[in-house]
Amino acid sequence: MAKTKYAFFEGQIVPIERAKVSIMTHALNYGTGCFEGIRAYWNDEEEELYVLKMREHYERFHRSCHMLLISLPYDVDTLGDITLELLRREGFQEDIYVRPLAYKASEKLAVQLQDLEDECAIFVTPFGKYIEKEEGASVGVSSWQRISDNAIPARGKITGSYINPALIKTEAIMNGYDEAIVLTADGHVSEGSAQNLFIVRDGKLVTSPVTEDILEGITRASLIELARDELGIDTVERKIDRSELYMAEEAFFCGTGVQIAAIASIDHRKVGTGKMGPIVTRLRDLYFDIARGKNKKYAPWVTPVYAGARRERLAAT
Image (cartoon, rainbow, N blue to C red; front, side, top):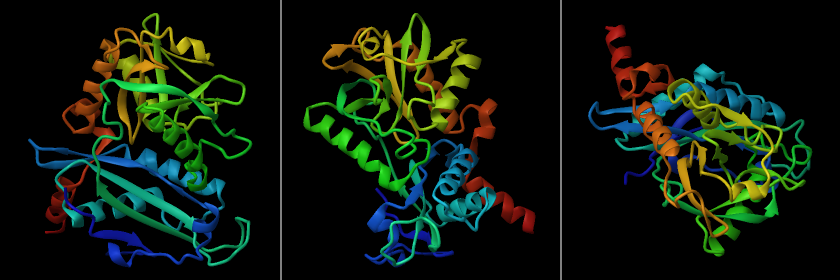
């Protein structure tokens, strides 16, 4: 696996070794930063790297910054251009994860968000599966609760808030599971440790609404659209009881990092047959074809990295 060589840091692309902050940095001490996760997929036949839903991710990045009073000097298009240039310099020919990060950069001990310096950084790195058993994961319901919107809003990808998913995921792994499902304070299903959740009941997709302390997932929204338009399957967004998890015909996680991961069991109870079901299979196949630029109907969802550079060179001559 190739190693990351560069980062966008303090306004320019620099060797990754130069992209460092002081231990006094505000974001390191107080978790006052936000981030995005963006996937880019390698298409071996076309020798092309495709960035999936880049605009939507950077729009959400801006919204997270707004919550934390972080002023970004880069609009969505500029962030996209920086990302493409960074990917081209790296020259990766494999699946990639893009990590934009905005943070309070002042070297100041003060519990506040206002009157601090803001910075933005981006790096890219090769990245494969988030859950190794993504065709049939073993999952447990966590003893930890999801933090509420009135405490730390889950719809913002805030760095400090990810101690909550870290506690949830760590407990799951130490208890012998591959992942976890977490409940809200009132006992309803929220999502996975750091991914959205769907179950299948009576042939329909069911997922928790955005008011259940979940991340407003870009992959989640994409799958609702694909299920409706390509599979003819409706999605119901409503509260889900814990016991409904045990009645599900199928269940799966989704998100940029986790992609689409089928759930084989919950709390040692089989989901359906205990294997990846037909709806999850169809959605996964469709999703990965789109992500790798193989489904031209959804070409607007992806941005080519290397072909784009070639077109720019031709336009300049």
